[in-house]
Every structure is written in structure tokens, then in C-alpha cells.
Image (tube, rainbow, N blue to C red; front, side, top):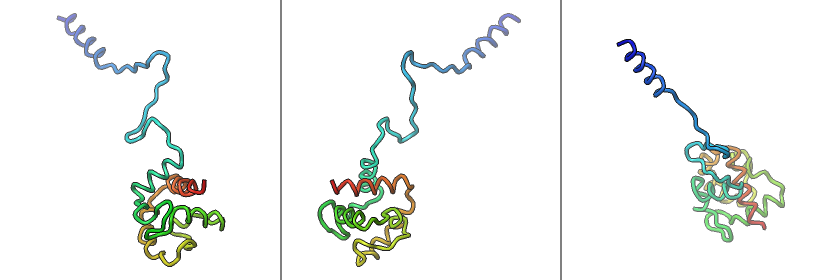
Length: 132
């Protein structure tokens, strides 16, 4: 009887033991939920944000003025004036591209203010990529 109890206890302990198995010869990589295996360039991330959660394309197109100025126009003016686009997107800068449309852009500041510096820099990289 004691041997049976001991055997059951041993099997229980062995079956509950968590072992990590690593593939032979290959490094393991883990990704958090939503993270892709591919690292995106700042421009690609910026484009994704610009067209996605930023909803910037509803007012800004690459080559033409819609509600707001075109992406090329924004990039050219910010580059020529050596202005800080990120400060503007955080709601802390004066409008330099199209001040007449500032009231419309101002309504979108809660979206851009909620973004991380990395996301804002990615948007800036995407916008500047239109100068190439």
C-alpha cells in the first residue's frame, strides 16, 4: 500500500513538473500579442499609423490638398523652415503650413497627443519620405 501511494505521488510530481524545451541549434524568440515577427521601418510604421489609427488620410493625401495640405507640402514646408513637426502634433506648436485650417486640425490633437513619441517620429519619417 505504501509503495502504491509513493508511486502515485512520484508520478503526480513528475507529471506536474514544467520543463522548457528549446529547439536544438535554433535561438528562440517570443513575441507579445499583436507584435509581428518582422520589424517595420519608421516609414512603414508611420504609414500604417497615418492611414490607420491616425486617420490622417481623411484630410491629407500625398500629392493633393483635400481638407488639409498634401503630405508633400507639409514635408517641404517643415523641412524648409526647420520646424518641429512632433511638437505641432503634440498640440504645442503653431500652425505653419495652412493656418486657415488649424481649427480642423485642432480637433484631431486628442488622437495625436495620445500617441507615443515613437509613433509620432514614425509619422514624421513617413511624411518626410515624400520628399524623395
